[in-house]
Length: 191
Image 1 (cartoon, rainbow, N blue to C red):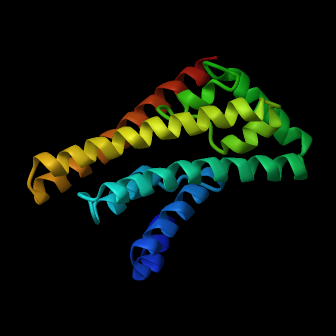
Image 2: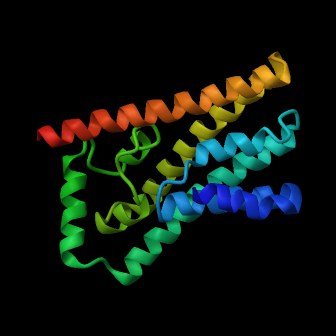
């Protein structure tokens, strides 16, 4: 898994290395392929779960990574322009979604059915400002809730129980995303 490689490489640089690793994982997830950023966010948070500035830093890095990864992909696609047949396939896919405008970017935080969101913003000529606002707002809510829940586990339970509860939170988050994504993709196949 690419995230493991990134964390392994940068973890030798301490907290700053972990921050850089997390940012790169969010970039990879936004631009190239899924890298399970939620998992790495909570695992890196677990290295110092009683440190509020650490949690706030990771939160900011996660949101910034989501913003910059999607923005970079948007700019690359706008500048390079996607071949016509690929653009048509992307537009047709967008039209099949339950919501086929910028609002899908909020839904995508729970039910990830739209990969490469920056590219879809560019190809569909969605309003960049509104789109990136939805991406940042969705990221802030999702990652804020995950960090607050994990922090609560570490305050209420012993270290081992808190780690298990955080791991369960990660599994539940990924499972809910997969199930919601599966349901939406199944709905799309029926169309």
